[in-house]
Amino acid sequence: MNTQYAIETIGLVKRYPTTARRAGGGFGRGFGGGVHSFGNIFSFFKKKKGPYVEALRGVDLQIKKGEVFGLLGPNGAGKTTLIKILCTLVIHDEGHAYVNGFDVKKEPRQVLKTLQAVLPESRGFTWRLSGRQNLAFYALLYRLGDKEARERIDYLLEITGLKDRADDGYQRYSTGMQRKLLLCRALLRDTQVLLFDEPTVGLDPASAMDFRHLLRDKLAHEEGKTVVLSTHNLPEAQDICDRIAILDRGKITACDTPNNIQYTMADEKVFNITFIDAVFNDQQGQMLNELERMPGVYGVTPEFDVDRNFIRMSIRADKDMALSRILEVIMKNGLKVGVINTQEPTLEDAFRAITRERRYEQSRDSGR
Image (tube, rainbow, N blue to C red):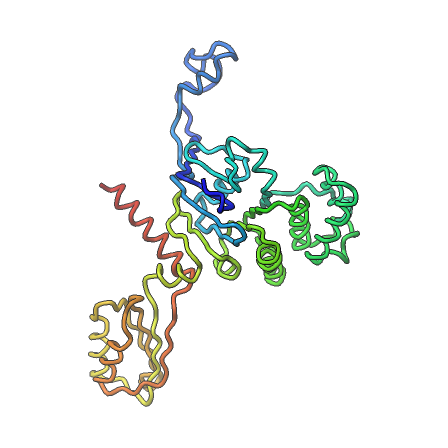
């Protein structure tokens, strides 16, 4: 455990039992005579452990205080399980997890005092009450004093842009406004760590952008809170996250800044080359064949017009491929280059490369 981290996990493992039924399943006699009273039900289940799946398979993660951290991964990667473990809704099987130095299994009360989660299924607002009245109700549940509650609610309504609609009934709120009210509720206790699971799902682009910038600029950068968000939205992660971790099949496969992952993990780039006054002929056809055979080149796509003018070509190449090698072949064949654009790998390219590599390694291991 290192107290400089807002969140730290060490060798975290979580297993879920499968839904496969055993022969002779049922209660009483259906258990094969193993259970004769309620008193030994628990000993029965302890003895007969069924098959299971590992949602998390040894997750090591360190999230710094005050940073915006993204958890990315395909469906079923374990993102939601990890978040639920951190906010004490799910108990892990092996390893350790700490929030601001508190053990989530041994010190859940202290963890919940310093952390607040905003999950997609979070609701609990009364439709007949206004936004302000709903927040006042939760402030009462959180045992905030009257003066503290009023000041806190006014402040939160102001920073989320809900002040002018605070006294409207909740049933009149749009999806974006409801999401902002959820954020207000999460911030009532002014905790230092905030966990979000798909925070902008269902929002229109403008509302999603406002929400992301509120998380990054106001909560993280201005107030110094640690914001952790699980998302499938790669542009969203690249826009607001200081660092991201890619979780695939229960393991962390990459953890770095979005830019570092984008440029170091993606395995290819694209050169788009435009020609001047070039006519396609047999010599140019041989040039294309030479380029395609060049080590580090994955594909060459030429483009012509109706008069067989050689307009441009796109070359998919290894990320470390030197453009000079390609230009040397082009110049040798007498072509004049007009414009060269390099299409750099995106975070989505890197994400696909990482998860594809992971799946290849697992399929290779399972075939041994």
